[in-house]
Figure: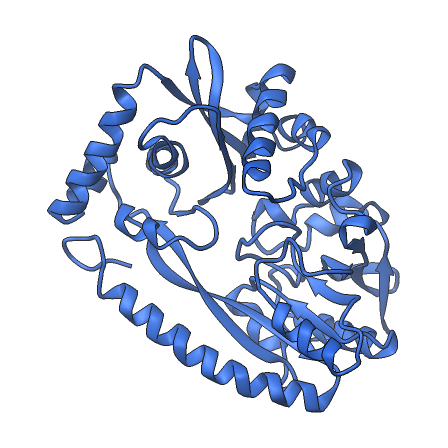
Length: 379
C-alpha cells in the first residue's frame, strides 16, 4: 500500500532518504539546499511560500518525493502565470493559494519528481503527479504547477495537465582544451567582441578569481550578500535570499558553491555566484559596486566557461532569459513545465491560449538558431 504524506518542512524528511531519491546530483533539489532556504527565512508564508513537500511511502519507507509549496503569489517562480491569475480572479475565483512543484527562486531545469533511477522510477513519477493533482482538488485549490522539469519526467503528467515550454541559453563543452579553444570555435565577429570585452576588464586594474564556497570567510560572504542585495534594490526588486542564507551557504554546500570575485585593492567590488554539480555549472546571482565595461560578462559568463573547461564540466547554465548570451557562446534550449487547472472550463480556455504561445515559442527558437555564434553550428 502506497501512502502520500505531506510535510510542512523538508526537515520532516530524513536527508539520507530524500537524497537517495535524487536521480542526479543537481544541487538545487538536495536536502541541504532546500533545508537551508527554509532555516534561514528565504521561504516563509509572508513571502508567499509555505513548504508542503510530498512523500510517497510504502511500509513507512520513502519511495518517492517532490519539493512542493503552497504559494500565496507567483513571485520567485520564473514561469509566469500572472495573466491566468488575473483572469480567474476577474471571474470571481481565488487563484491563490496554488500548489507549486519547483525549487524556490531557481529557474534551473532539473529533477522535480524524485524516484531514484530504478525500473520503478517512471511509475512513481506518475504517482507523484497524481497525488499533487488529488491534493489540489481535495483542498479546493485553483491549480498545480510543475516548473523546469527534466525531459524524462514529462510522461508522468496525463492529458489534463497543460504543456508549456520556454527558451534558455546554455553553453556546451565540446572538448575545448582551454578558453582559446572555445573562442576558436566561434565566428570571427563574436570572437573579436569577446576579446574586446575581456580586454576592458583586464585593463581595469581589478583582480579576478574563482573561489570555492568552502574557502570563503564570514566577512567575504557578508560582502557577497551585500552586493547581491544592492543589485535587487537598484532594480526595485525584493532580495529574497537572506544574509544568514549566504553566511551558511559555503559551510553547507562547500565547493558545490563557486564564486567569481573582482577585487580592487583587496576589497571585493563585484561577484557572480554559481552552484555546481558533477557535470554542470549553474549561474545564479551577480552584484557590483563598480561600473567597468564588460565586467558583468567576465564574471557571469567567461569565468564560468573557463571554470567549466578547466574542470571538465559538460554544460554551463547561466540563468533564465537573455538573448545577449547567444553572442557569447550560449545556445537556445527548451525548458518545460506542466500545469493542472482544476476548473475544466478555465483549463480549456488556457489550453487554447497556450497553443498560440507554443507556436510563437517554436518560431522564436528557430529564429535564434539562425544566429548561432559558432563558425559551424553546434548544439
